[in-house]
Amino acid sequence: MSTDVIKFASNLINRESVTPTDAGCQQFMMELLTQQGFKHELMNFEDTQNFWSVRKGKTEGPVFVFAGHTDVVPTGNLEDWHTPPFEATEKDGYLHGRGAADMKGSLAAMLAATQQFVQDHPDHKGSIAYLITSDEEGPFINGTVRVVEELMNRKQPIDYCVVGEPSSTEKLGDVIKNGRRGSLTGFLKILGTQGHVAYPHLADNAIHKSYLALHALAEEHWDDGNEFFPPTSFQIAIEQAGTATNVIPGEKYVEFNFRYSTESTADGLKQRVLDILNKHQLQYQLDWKLNGEPFLTPEGNLLTAAKKAIKQTCNIEAEALTSGGTSDGRFIAKTGAEVVEIGPVNKTIHQINECVKIDDLKKLVDVYYGVLQQLLAK
Image (cartoon, rainbow, N blue to C red; front, side, top):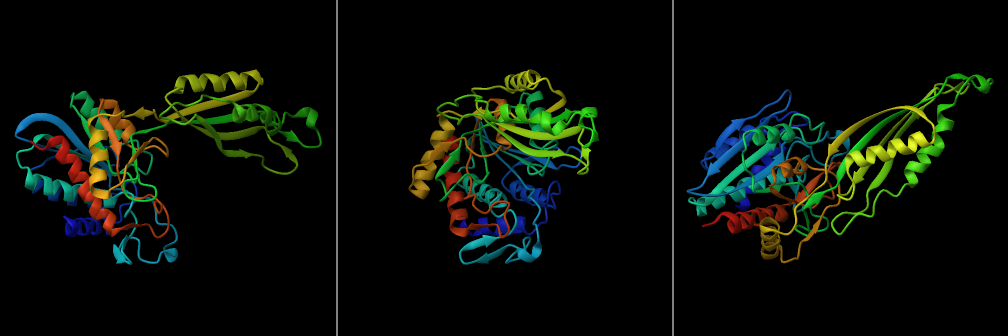
């Protein structure tokens, strides 16, 4: 398994699969899974490649899914890289390349663990499945969310899902993500009247009139969070206004984001924003995008198996957290599945010179294998 995971990861890293391009990553994965008795279904939507693969065991039982993405973020300035980003390079105990940590290394570990598990347990109970997309780093419109919608329409059960996002913080296995906060983005245009700065009585400054309302939004206490989630946060990300120093702006554009706990709802947050804007008697236009609802996997079979596998492999007690950004786990959780994220250390993800410890990839294979063994071995 140790040799295979580096070989698999290198093959994937060498493919320039910037969102939504897949560059043959999924075909490579399906070819390996075919050797283990998986049956594949391509589920492509628009510009996004997805596949759903299943290997059924000899007896009825739970459906266990490995989920992940083959796409990666752009490289940035190539001259800043120590090694070519799409040429997997082993150096000083690390495997370098774009996607090494997020998340081609995890995909390789899934493949290696599955290969070994099927060899050791050809008559395993239940089913092993793969749900893979090429659109997780981008707009996430035609990827996992569409596949899950189709699977739910078919009433396809999913009991357990391990997403290969790089969950670890300082060392492999120190953190398991067992949930994520919701994400809600607002696109606000505050309306005034444009005019000459020398004649303010003939204009209505959109920047000036926005201050009190935006300050109130920034100072609002949205909720206290709970034992699983930190308090809901509100952050203004973009402000744009003005055309020239002698022109009073008639419009101001503001983009803001909520990362919210299960103590709040998207509809509730929307209404509270409207209440604050209306209290300050603003004229405005406001559009919303719900990026994902919060989800939580409490202590159960999957989380217990994950913690045990990490303890056996890494000799540490994993902490279950819900911090960080969003992931495709939010879509899969809608099926009712227990969902956790287990992956490499995330210190270099999306950065120049992304890399992952080679020993960590080898251990990650053992972690995934351990989870499979606890849940599906007869």
